[in-house]
View 1 (cartoon, rainbow, N blue to C red):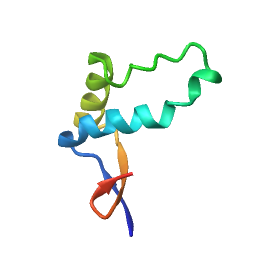
View 2 (view 1 turned 90 degrees about the vertical axis):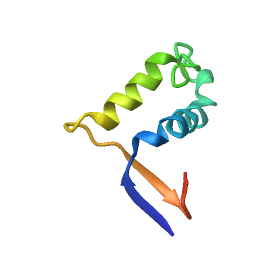
View 3 (view 1 turned 180 degrees about the vertical axis):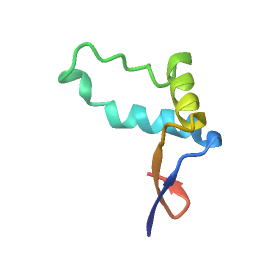
View 4 (view 1 turned 120 degrees about the horizontal axis):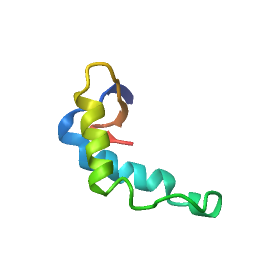
Length: 68
């Protein structure tokens, strides 16, 4: 069963990895895409700040305790 919930700070690395997976085939459509952005310090800061900011909301989908 898939559950939608708020992302947690301990999931930043997994969010970075999921972002990489989601955009892996996009360079052929977007030549300006920076493929290593999510794994960079900027990407980590983005996900961390988004989770920690009470004005932002970042949801994840979880299937049997695994982010998908």
